[in-house]
Image 1 (tube, rainbow, N blue to C red):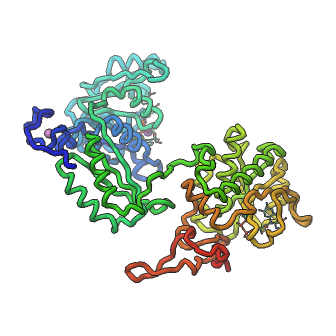
Image 2: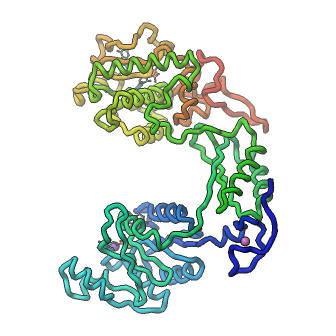
Image 3: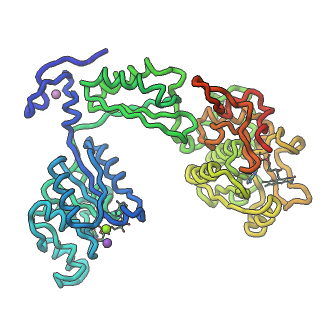
Length: 516
Ligand SMILES: Cc1cc2nc3c(=O)[nH]c(=O)nc-3n(C[C@H](O)[C@H](O)[C@H](O)COP(=O)(O)OP(=O)(O)OC[C@H]3O[C@@H](n4cnc5c(N)ncnc54)[C@H](O)[C@@H]3O)c2cc1C
Ligand SMILES: NC(=O)C1=CN([C@@H]2O[C@H](COP(=O)(O)OP(=O)(O)OC[C@H]3O[C@@H](n4cnc5c(N)ncnc54)[C@H](O)[C@@H]3O)[C@@H](O)[C@H]2O)C=CC1
Ligand SMILES: [Co+2]
Ligand SMILES: [K+]
Ligand SMILES: [Mg+2]
C-alpha cells in the first residue's frame, strides 16, 4: 500500500532535497506550500468587546486557496507592537494579512506600524487623495477624511472587482511588500478579499477527509500515532478534535495532504485499525436541510415507518385545518418534541410552505428551574430550524392563558405527548384542552410512538438532541425534580461508575425512573 519511493525531487528543483515520494508531495512540499500569517489588530478584540470573526474568515478562505496559514496573532492598536509583529510575520511567511486599524480616528495606527516595520515613511498617495477628495468632498490633507489617503510610500493599490456585480470596488486593498492591509469591518474585509482572490491563490489544493468515531481520544491515540509514523514522509497532516456536545461521535479525525492519494491511503489505514463499530459511515451533518427527504420508507423498519407515516398524516391534516401562523409546536427541549419538531418541519416542507418565523412557531413554557443544557439545546434548535420561539412563564395554565391573550391567532398546539405519558391514555390525535384549561386544539401526532420509537427515529436521522440524554437522563423535567435513571448506571473498564446514554435503556416503561 505504500506509495513512497525515493529520488531527487523533480518538482521543487530550486531547493534541492531528497524527495521521498514519486508523486512529488513529500513532507517538504507540504511545508513548502505558500504560507501566510494573519494579524488581527484592535484593542476591542483584546478586551473581548468584539468577537474576532475576521481570522476565521481569512483562514478558511486562504485554506481553500491552498495557502498554509501558519499563525494568527491578536494585538492592540499600538504602533510599536504592530511594527514588531508585522516585521516578524513579513519575514517568516510568504504573505501577511492584517485586519483593522485603518480608519480615520486616533486609535487606527496600522499603516504607521506597517511603515515602521518596512522602514518607510507615510505619505499622501495621489490616487487615494483624489479618491477621498471626490468621495468625501474635502480637500484638507489634515482632515480625518484624508487620513485614509495616507499610506506607506512603497504601497501598492489593488483595486478589486466584485465577482458578482463585476464592478470595480471604490476603495483599494493597500499592500506593502508582502503585507496586505485589510479594514476590520467584516463586510469590507470580505468584499476586498473576494474581489482580489487571485493575489492569494496558489497552484496547491489541500485534499481533506474526515473520520468520525464514537470513542474517547485515549482509546484511539495509539492507532493515530501509528498512522502518523507510517505516513511521516508522505506529507500528511492528521488532527484529532474531540467534541463533547455531539450525540453521535466523540472525535473528529481530519486527514489532510496536498496529494489526495496520500489522504486516501491514510484513511484506508485508519479504517482498518480503528474499531469498526465505532466509525460513523453515513453521518448526516445537517438533517434539517434535507427538507423532509429523509422521512421515507427506506429509512425505517416497517412498523416504525407505519407510525411515522400516520404522524405525518396528522400533521398534514393540521395544516389543512389551520393556517401555519395559527399553529405552534409545544417545545421544551425534550426528546419527544425534538422528534416532533423535525416531523413538523418535514410536513411544512412537503406542503410547500416557506420556512420562516411567521410560518413556523414554537411555544416554550419556561420552568422555574430549567436545565442549562436543555435551554442551550433549545437555542441551537431555533437557529437550526429557523422557527420563532414564544417563551411564556408561570404555571402551565397561566402560561396558556397568557398565550391566548398575547397571541390570539394561535389556535392549535402540536405536542409530543405519547399514550404512555401520565393521563394521556384517552387522548386522540386532535383533542381540545379540558374545559377548565384555556381553549386550544391539542394535536398529538406521536400518541402511538414508544420510547424506543422516538430514539430509533432520531438516531436513524442523526437528529441532534439535548446532551443530557447521553449522560443518563431518560426523561427531563424541572432540574430540582429530575435525576439520572439508575437503570443506566454501570461500571466502566477502569472500575468507576458511569451512566449509559438514554437510547440504551432496555425497558421503555422505566423511562420516568429519574423523575421525582
Ligand atoms: C398546550 C398544552 C395544553 C395542555 N392542556 C392540558 C389539558 O387540557 N388538561 C390537562 O390536564 N393538562 C394539559 N396540559 C398539561 C400536559 O398534559 C402535561 O401535564 C404537561 O405537558 C407535562 O407533561 P409531561 O411531564 O409528560 O411532559 P412531556 O412529555 O415533556 O410533555 C408532552 C408534550 O407537551 C409539550 N410540553 C410539555 N411541557 C412543555 C413546556 N414546558 N413548554 C412547551 N411545551 C411543552 C411538548 O410538546 C411535549 O412533548 C397541557 C400542556 C400543554 C403544553
Ligand atoms: N469605504 C472603504 O472601503 C473604507 C473605509 N474605511 C473607513 O475606515 C473605518 C474602518 O476602518 P477599520 O480598519 O475597519 O477600523 P477599526 O479597526 O476601528 O474596526 C472597525 C470595526 O470593525 C470591527 N472589527 C475589527 N476587527 C475585527 C475582527 N477581527 N473581527 C470582527 N470584527 C472586527 C469592530 O467592530 C470595529 O469597531 C471606517 O470609518 C470606514 O469608513 C477604511 C478603509 C476602507
Ligand atoms: Co520533494
Ligand atoms: K476606530
Ligand atoms: Mg480599530
